Image 1: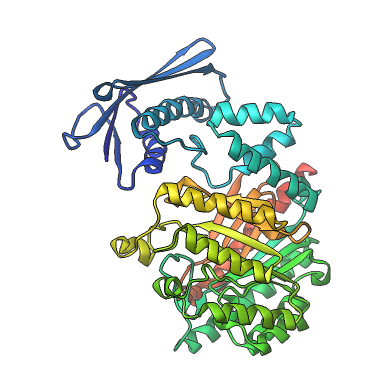
Image 2: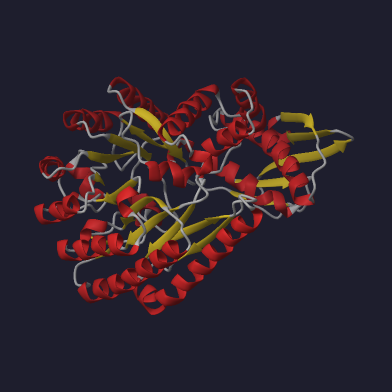
Amino acid sequence: MNILIKGLNDKRYERNLQLIADLFFEDSTLKVSEEADLNSDALEIDITVQINQDRIIAFAEAKEHSLTAERKTNYIVKETEKESFKQNKNVVSHVFLSILQQLTGMTQKWGVLTGIRPTKLMHKQRMKDAPLSETRRHLKEQYLITDEKIDLMEQIVERQLKMIPDLYELQDGVSIYIGIPFCPTKCAYCTFPAFAIQGKLGKVSSFLAGLHYEIQETGRWLKENGVKITTIYFGGGTPTAISAEEMDALYEEMYRSFPDVKNVREVTVEAGRPDTIFPDKLEVLKKWNIDRISINPQSYTDETLKAIGRHHTVQETIDKFHLSRKHGMNNINMDLIIGLPNEGVAELEHSLNETEKLMPESVTVHTLSFKRASEMTLNREKYKVADRTEVENMMDLAQKWNKDNGYVPYYLYRQKNILGNLENVGYAKPGEESLYNIIIMEEVQTIVGLGCGAASKFIDPATGKITHFANPKDPKSYNEGFIDYTQKKLAHLEAIFNRKAEAGV
């Protein structure tokens, strides 16, 4: 679908309108221009914005289809032109969404919201002490989010604050993410740093040497500056793809270098691939008091696992779950993905029935996203996936199953190109929620990323501004520059915590 937007004369609208168009059409090209230089079959929409004293009015019209939309709301003069322009973008998004909903018959339950962290909006309202009724009205009017999704957000926010009562007061500490960039194989939908580990033992050793350095230097800085760690999360890749001896040395380094690890609220290790879980590795986890792990089936259909490039079987997932229980793993998460190739409601129902036999402490329900650089996206014609209606039915089934089995939603996030414009939701038995997942999704605390592809987020305590810093994704580049990356991250920490001290926060 080619879309031409006339009347705005401002390219700053283009990206946001393209994101909205992508909610409706798989392959859309949008341009804000007065010149009809797209294909002759382009959908033309005229949009105008007027500001009359304290009112802002947007009007949209698709003449060829006899469709119109209008949005009127209060206009508030902001301190900067950028802040003022956000109001223009909002009303333009409203009328553009309305035209496309009328044209396609689709209703977008998340409205004009294209960001990945919807619950942040509700937290912001709570921090202002806004009444819940006012918050709900704001979300409906400002973003066109439906009651169904607002209800979900409300449940999640309440659960998060029950698990972390000091969620809004975590700026004094940091959380640590440690990325291990190796997996047995790379999944077709994956764009995480994940390199097949076979034949790369030299790279693994070099990478781990750099990672140990990062842990040592980061730990030294934290100790010297009296900064505590709230949570630690080993992700990847698959952190259990390395050997038991390498895991043991890594956790020993963690305890030796980081401050007061015994009092860290939570340490998680993603053991996501069942084909990396063995008794010796589980014993290492137990030795270092780590009992929160992920074992991710994704699907309980062997044909699906083969299609997406996972080299374990359904039976291996089940066997490794029981093996982990036997070795003292008392908080296990399992991921399921809605919309995997050739799967529909029946296959998801089977996966949920199999999950019910195991009853892990938490279940994360992902909706398949066609990530830009994944093998699945690059060869999309090879992968037949469910349509929007079936995907929505699958999400409804997953929500009902979790509720019926005593799981509560506690975090959610969204992604670009996600099937059905839906979401990923983490469910848990009350009291078993992942604190790290809450902290990183709500962006309430600085996250220091160590290892390959690890992303750091430095949050200014005064302004809330987030500064991103990412280590390189491939082990070779990481190995060549880990000293430099470490020092740059420490400089960011110096700036954040020095400003905090100067402001008396």
